[in-house]
Image (cartoon, rainbow, N blue to C red):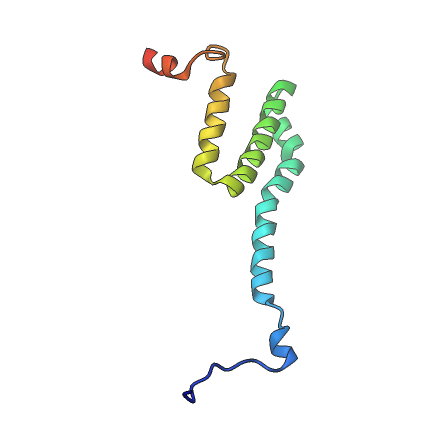
Length: 110
């Protein structure tokens, strides 16, 4: 056996050291990721007043935010290309002129 061995940490302090820098960076990322949702919820009423939005327009704005949150959550799980394809297919299916029709037939019309 050669005299070349890996050094194994033996003290309890070196084994149980908490990765403070990694935790702080992850926490900052989570905070900035969540900040846009909090900012939107606080700014919805001033945005409505400033732009003179009707109740319907405010509902559209809110649903767009919810749609964005759902897209973001699924994109982290499945990947952006897959979720983009799924959400686009769902959106096309909900259009009144395409509901119940074959997408290939719709594409060949244009």
